[in-house]
Length: 168
Image 1: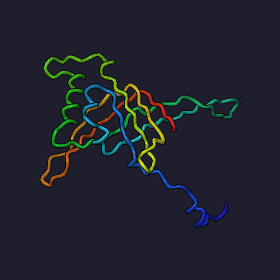
Image 2: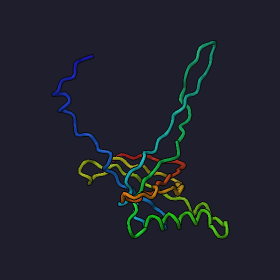
Image 3: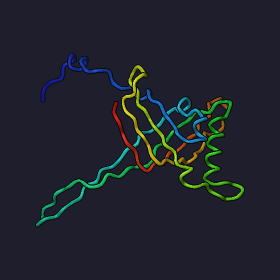
Image 4: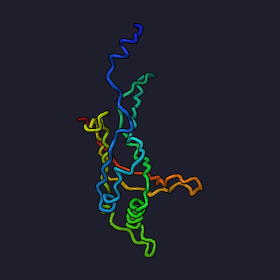
């Protein structure tokens, strides 16, 4: 293995910072909540590739199998004094299950499309886009109330069925 010199490391390009990203939510209640501006952190969609074992005369060979989407990412959203996030999440959860009647809206009316765009270091160009399909929100909890003036964050879990990755 060759030795790595400092000049080799300096010659590498800049690294991508993980805090340079934007989010687009397509859904009537949630577009007005300004999720892109208020989203503080998120996890990235992932998938697991499985292998099929084929046993032949005492030997085992592997062949590619299915790809299973892990189906869940977590999002932390900052709330401000106008309470737009809380109101949007409440409206969405009421479409999933109305407290007073127990009625649910049709599933097609609940599905969202969410795009997570990873930006370059200038924050002007999209490098990679995760396009999450058939998303449902699990309207999560918010942080505990406390005496220290900490901002209010909603922890939201996004469940998705499938996603695509595109590179720019």
